[in-house]
Image (tube, rainbow, N blue to C red; front, top):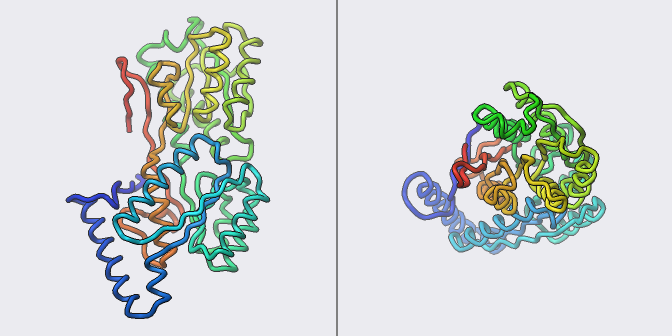
Length: 359
């Protein structure tokens, strides 16, 4: 079982969270005293840290949610510790060349650590080369570089959610409903659930794994699903809406289920259904974005799988600060193979006219 991060590292109070906070603050205070005695340069490093953050696309809903949480956690850290965080967040706008330039700029500005949401996870060599040459640790997040690249240096880390877990939890939403109310899933009563599937980028590891394991989970648990068609919508709402519009015309009254690799594409399918006046198709998403959960609440989305964005942001900041300062990781952050951290996820669905979260 994966160890989960204890929330609220910077929160006050008793118990484990309070103890973690007090221990961390004691260490920070001790470091401040020691470095103050050692000279101005070291004291300045304790008082101020520079973190360079590059996002693959700033308009991605999930990434925006993470950014908001990260900025909030950074403010809390500054207030609690007195350490100034200079967090430079840049949008690569889907361009790997732009992101490469951003990384070079971060290094030239003297960033202590880099947090990179890769545009192209298979084209990471230049970034690693630059970081290694400058001795700047790198925390990749959300878009996982291949194992060969991650093994090039012991100062490379990855933070994300387990895509197989996401897919299994998504599939189980339908499995549970089918077992309790098969008529709500097999809408035409023919003994087969006909579905379409909206996929993310063809080269993204999460899209590949989610596409496979969601359907496999349904079939392994006795749900008779049958694929009508599928298509790549690159995580985007507008592209998914266009695909769904085509499918509604091509398969009138046949689509009973839409399986989407993320919430934004599921919302795009809902947009197309609204335009066509279609209401009775079940839809599943992943990410637990704010608009996605609102769609669950309104009954338009059967369910989604929500990653713990507060945990995501706390762990990202915790790893980044520790590596920037050359210190051990905070209590509660345990890396698999010394490199990987997987955030927790919950199922979000409606139950008796209310939205619930299930671990």
